[in-house]
Image (tube, rainbow, N blue to C red):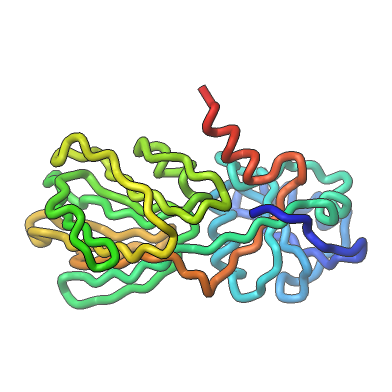
Length: 262
């Protein structure tokens, strides 16, 4: 949920940028205009780029706990504020703080390798070859779908519901709702299954059937495990991500607008 961001006029800011000319130009402009510090000493971290860089920045500085204020200097900017160098300190002081909890993926390959990773947007299972995937779905210990034949399936957070989940025709989830989206990607059987909305406390387990013939990758944001055998997904309430948005264009308003987009 969005709430006023309690800040002072003497905030220490750090500025980081993606590796593009557009973002680096913004970095040079902001560092010439404002006094900055290293991220580990900052009260707010300003990230210049697109949504991909915003996710990267959130993961990179997760342990610092400082709010991240993104400004759009990339190709996609749903998680970003508009880039305007003037009045930055006032924008930071008056911004809305949004706190999110990521998903935690624990995936095991058929070779025995295990990967644990956090996902801010979604955890997605994707077929690796021309063969359609076969996936069994269990929720909170109860087998709900014996066999899903598909290109893949994903679990999305409310913040991530407007990303890959929306492209896969999943539901948009308003921020502040205690739910997750379970969405198939090009489901073939059962053909009419369109997914489910789960409580945020749900523990989802995917079992890859015929995994040698029909290999599947498990992806949590930018972390991928190929040849997955079992994948477990649940929200990690012990980890909190802090995002800062302009008051008039906060993330909750963007999610609402997306539901009425043509």
